[in-house]
Length: 200
Length: 214
Image 1 (cartoon, each protein chain N blue to C red):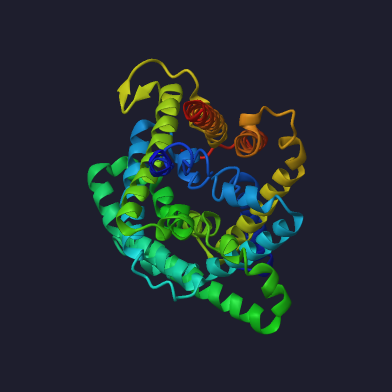
Image 2: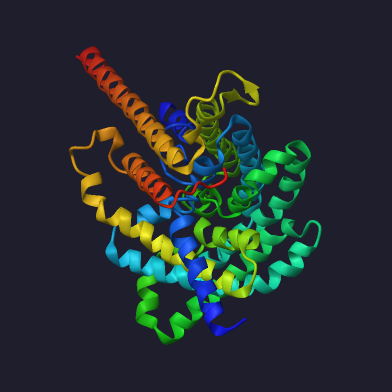
């Protein structure tokens, strides 16, 4: 496999993960985390960086574990336990690095770091990789795209915050219910745009 | 007493984990497209979350939060193994189609968030009941979504054909988002009306007491 083929594969899988199989709009992974993160622009950046770093790094590690585990007849029974272990080790290592070398940043993010790392989007990206991923560039592309896809979702929700929380919205719909309906409309738009429907 | 009773039933309506708190929504929004799928999700949610909540209570609070959370998820991942074995025996086809959403339940917010903010503050017996009520609340939301989408998208109710499908798009994730949003609004409306009625009753009984005292 040449370098250009590897890059092309990473870019293709990233695009698939961002637009076709967006973690929030298409899979509904961590929709609540996206709603929470989108309230503040600083949170959007922090969550996206944390998630993208974790999904990409964890995808690289899981590539080497998925093959032997999935070749076993009931290997997938143990995948959640293994993925939790991998995410846990990377999470603690990341926190230690931040604490040691970027103490100021560590203080800022420690309150919500667990929300950005321990959520359905991160572990869901790893499970999707185990189903659809075939080679290492594919795993990297899909993992990276999951984080960027989360950013796209947070961005779309963030720009509509004021309108969705306005007094023009009936009281019982204000906040979470209207947010879900809005995400549904964006999800519908992406489905129409790509002509793609998840197999559920 | 009335306060105590209302707090025991919080998980059904007032703090319904899906419709009011907006947690553990992914399986319901995407995978609960029929009554049978909703049933599989509810069984898996119960079998993974409930024993995990009961067992993790014994993890010492002295352990730092980060590691505690990891341990909760690890226990849930262990619970996933017997859960998936049983589900594959009972519902082989349905389990296969929703497996990824069953796997995701090992990091669900009932285990990672509600344990710390609610369950582990309560005495053990009360916590056991409270967690069950929350799971019941999840079941109500899952069945409501699964049954409505099953009827609209497939014209079936738990596999029984009722009529011709009238809205095949109801099985899509975007419809799941919209339906859960509408159900959340209805839930808020009911919870708001109940709390207003309680406030009126309280005000009424307080007026009565004042009148009696006079």
